[in-house]
Image 1 (cartoon, rainbow, N blue to C red):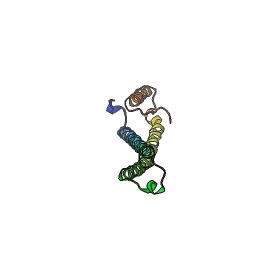
Image 2: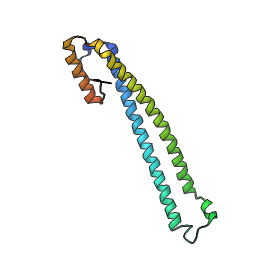
Image 3: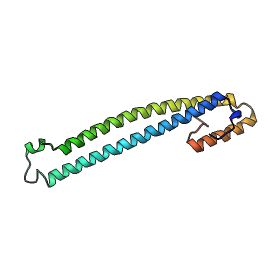
Image 4: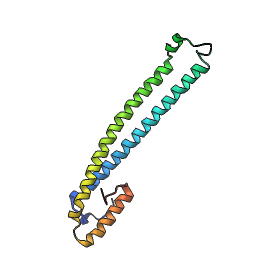
Length: 146
């Protein structure tokens, strides 16, 4: 944040810094959720390819046998385990993402509500507009409306 320190109260500066911190945490949670989702999709794709291979070229080529269907090789068990871990991680990070988004939005709304109290004079609204535009550009945080 490159703005003049004396133009705003210390508590408002701290609120803006906390808002930026929460925004960064939200972005991290979104990225983690996306990464684990792609991981799960990759494991599921590998399972599908493994099943396709088993049915086309492997054990079932000579004929369908229920005993062979339940004989699972270690690679399949490993992939199923990876999918289960991946799904658990996706759910975990989705919960963390929702919590981070809620905290971020609550603080953002509080900053927007307190803004008129700090910039009451007409001349300071120009400074406010510049500051909010800069924060929006640097950190992708919209402080103009809820």
